[in-house]
Image (cartoon, rainbow, N blue to C red; front, side, top):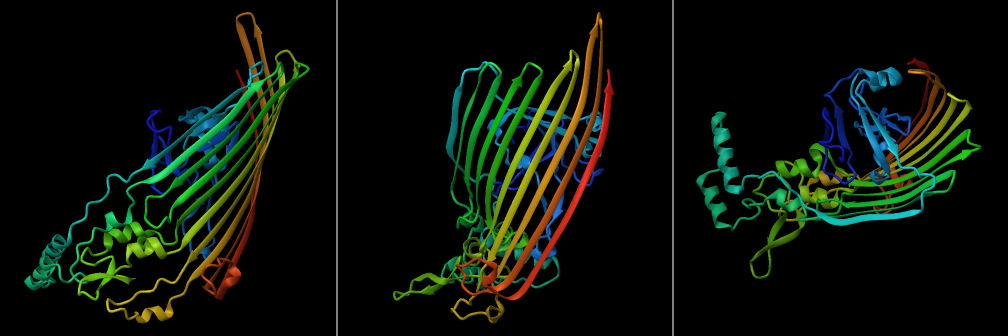
Length: 462
């Protein structure tokens, strides 16, 4: 998001307002040469594979999951960013760079630098803006009559219906509910904190940091939230003026909670599909004859969005990424260096979903027959990925008078192992115990394993 508006040809858009949702990045439009429209991210010289991995069908999730370590990177750890937009980007990275390359360099310690401690943080509130403005109950009735009449059908609302609406005495049939206003909070809290230490001695430099981000959602019921912890350490040193060593480790712990229902069944779409003539809760008369809320949610042609916000369960995603990079550069003679780089990226993700029974009742309190077939649902999935890279380079540079000669010869290998495991069940014995073994019927499970490898040779002469 910090890149938005900074670089010509780079488009950064938010596809969701949910806490923890990533931004969509496009460089010079879209293309599909390599099966994705995302640019290739290179973190400290290591390409981060953004392979789209479809979840198993048993999990009833048709969306793809992008496994990418960049999503959990702490912005406070970034030293600089370079965006490659032209064909030269593919010279080293091949077809993976068809959509451009974003090079990210993280902060490192400087030699002969005094130790500096730094803290920055913030706390604030987010508020919803640019919300849809829906028609009120009377406008809804008028437009419904107009639409049906134009289609050659009879008008659904007579003058008697308009009189009942104006009287305010029939809240179960003729209310005036602004569902958009009902599902959103007025504000949601967000806070972020970063602390770092940086310094160095005669031949050694170090950088350490820790970051924390906490974001609440703007939908009532607290169905959306995210938290992220980042830790990073980088050390570089020189040995006998010929050998330079650099090592860094980073760890990300990311938690994201969403409501159990989404899409056309989610709270956002339902709030725009629900009739404004229905109340939030069915109304019943009290001992004084006044109409008050009952304990049952109203329902219409679609489910009540407030019921979804409060009672649809949750989907929790817990992602952990451990990344290590080791570099060595040996000066053989003046102008001739050999370099080696090894990295390992361990990515794990667990997704837990629980959808309780969502029962519906008529305005008089009697249950719908569909309640007899209602089932709660629980699922759990695991993804484990380990990606490793190994690279060797031989670099020659020589200046002779006014002339400069350079040559580079390199070898690179990347390989990845991936496994998935998922299970679902229905009819959980106790709704407060969200474990697979608590489900009593419809046992389903699946698991996959796959691996790939890429070996490259490259060279350059200047």
